[in-house]
Length: 413
Image (cartoon, rainbow, N blue to C red; front, side, top):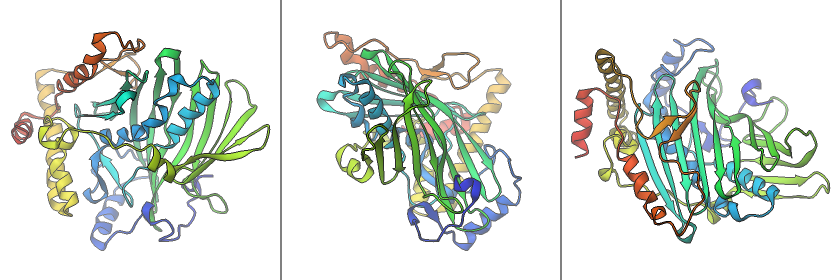
């Protein structure tokens, strides 16, 4: 049982990197907000206090998935199907340890907001990342990773659904991603666990990840079903993940994968009982981590995440919360003004970087430049691919009112 269900006691200071102790003023602000909430209430329209914000947009946070992208760089040349599947699983598990200290959440992106960056692997090609906020209500972020030379594409969309649960708050990560290995014709689909903050009223505020997830690949025939859990009343350990690899449609376990997603995860062969380290997070940080390469803020367009939120970030990093709150409010008011102006003109918002694939599926989004053909080193067009993605990113627009638009454009000129 997850501690979200059991609400087990937390020992203060046991794992301080996941805990938050508020001073009296922030605590009173939070309590005043909580008193207005009802259990089960949707928090997507609730203005959260600035002091709980992580100084980056959710669009940038999603780039964490590729901070250990080296793990899948050679996936297309791995001959054994099970080993390919386990490689994808290891890469997936390596994406959860990135977080600021304490209990923080990233900025809710403004409609039309864009984030893009890249990782250059030399002979291994370049991995590009594009993300766009494609919907405001409901909030939906679409993102696209691609490395033409390595031969894979990752498309995904996430709709975070926030709820107040009494002593806890949840951010349910409703969404699905598809990793395509082009030369092999394989597609790996997976979903995401959810984020919880507990101890809002009683106990220590703590950030947790919990929920059931699955990675599956019809072409290889394998699937991994697992649960992210935390300590319950009587048993369990925080930041745990446990699951098994099976054949799709079979209950027979091939191997078990379990441990702590922030420390060490082991894999156990069902037939032999042999157990080995599957992922050592600290070792992997030294071996495969690569920071993103993003344009300097003063070179970014007015609708790019770091430029959009620059003043809020400045306030948070200098601990000037009034300044951060003022500029956060300007962005939120500007987004509402943009909606009002479009409604008065009878215009619907049009996304710039992504397009709907299935009209009635709110999470079916794909980058407008998405090449599913295998990489051809003899094709001169391959060298132009990065420039094409950059040109697409440069076509963005922010869905805010004319007054805020002029301010943002003026600050980025």
